[in-house]
Image 1: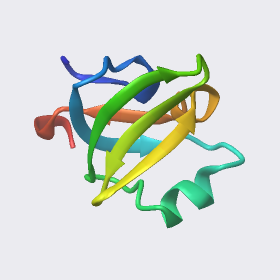
Image 2: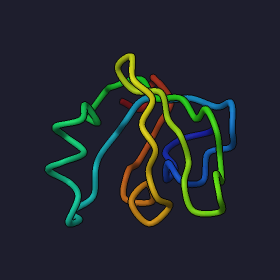
Image 3: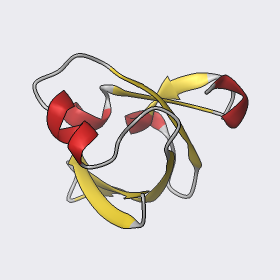
Image 4: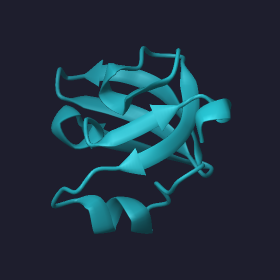
Length: 80
């Protein structure tokens, strides 16, 4: 990964740190779940049933739809 990218574009097995959550209907809930600036996140499984991906965040595995994960910007440690 180089620079900042959208979480939904990260391949399975990659990781980074959350840079920003864009304004979206699910933003408050994502923050409650621990998706905050600087948090480590890893892609565990991509494209589960063509619409979900599983992420490791703060010791938990959380599945998000692609339309929700595309609102999360992820960067390398040096960009956060």
